[in-house]
Image 1 (tube, rainbow, N blue to C red):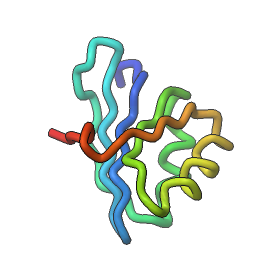
Image 2 (cartoon, rainbow, N blue to C red):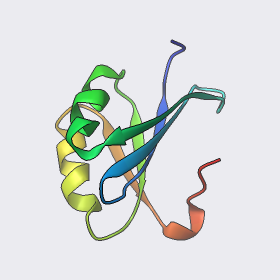
Image 3 (tube, one colour):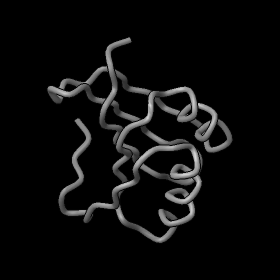
Image 4 (spheres, rainbow, N blue to C red):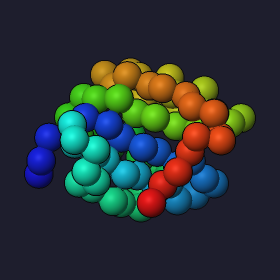
Length: 83
């Protein structure tokens, strides 16, 4: 798998959408992950920046993901776009 540098995470109630990009911005991974599998899946990815839409539950997930060694960035909903 190509080197992952940026991970976009779309939080939902049960199934989360994950998009990972390389240093050039090309999407190298698209995956749907259930809530129970999210932290295990992210722990297997190389450490990088995880960007999430700022919403009510994002702070809990941000702390959990930061414990795995990723850098967590919260972005405004107006700038979120997952192709």
